[in-house]
Structure formats: structure tokens, C-alpha cells
Length: 197
Image 1 (cartoon, rainbow, N blue to C red):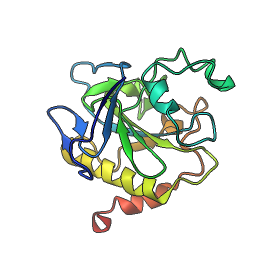
Image 2: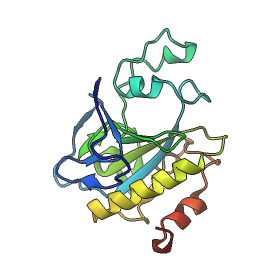
Image 3: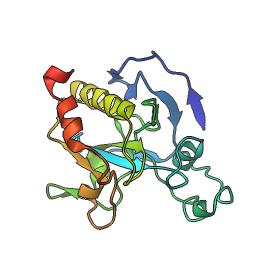
Image 4: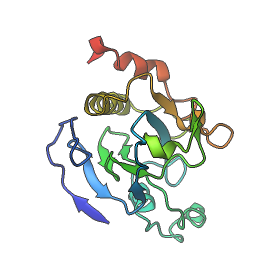
């Protein structure tokens, strides 16, 4: 697992040449590939994750996305340890951000999915994980960080917009439920209004 320090603390901008978010700690995952030619960026997918389920903090999300989750560390990890999954960014409970895959590359976050009649959402989306569960409220700091990240993505990639955000449950209905009923979409939309920034 390669770790690099933050390039510039509290800078919510993105280096388009590298696809890296300045405010994030880089924990680069091997689970990514190149986007299909001409795929573009058209969607932001919001996820929720906790490892073990319902527990926050610890190294386990990093280790899952970097392919070295120890199967014996927790009973629930046995079926997860062999997965090859990733996201572009994780937003921790305190709002700290960790980036696993540059935005220009394809992270493996949505699985079998479709949005507005277009399948294989990984091809054209950014995957953002929020540390949380479907039942527990997300933290204030997470909403602030998520709104800043979405604003930075929209500024860096003009094909994205606040009308191009979906939950994992929307792109994989019946298969996924995150970020869940506990996620306050109205609050996020209010934070994304120009007057709120």
C-alpha cells in the first residue's frame, strides 16, 4: 500500500493533470484500470461503508481497497478479503478524505449498475464512499467535506454537475442500499447551492 502525505492541507481543489485531490491523503489502490476511450465523467456515485459493519475508524477500509484485508481479523472479513474493489475517495466521520484512485482512472465501486439508461457506471463515474451505515446519521463534517469535494469535481470536470449525483442504491437498485435512508439528500443539495459556498 503506497502512502503519500497530503500535498496541501485543506485545499479542496483537484490537479486535473494527475486526478488527485489536494486535501486528501493518498492511499493508492491497485484496484483500478483505465476508462474506456471517450467514456467521460458524467456521474458522481455516493456510497456508504463501514468495516466491520457498524464500526468506524481503524485501517480496514484502506486495507479492503488496497487488497490486503486480513480474512481472519474479523468473522465478516472472510468473504470480503478476496474482493477487488475500490473507490476514488473515502470521507471519514471527521471529514478527513482519503483518495485511492485518481479521478481520471476507473475505480471499481459500482459493480453491476446503470444510470439514465447507461450501464456499467464505473466507466463514467466518480465513486465517493462515506464512512457510515444505512441506519446511523452521517456526521456534519462529512456533509461539509462531501459538498466541498463535489464542488471541486464540478469545477475540475465541467461534464459533472449537481444534477449528476446518485446513491449507490439508485444505480444498483435491489442489490445495494447505501448510502441509505440515513443520508440527508436535501441537506447535501442545500450545501451545493451557490449561495451556501
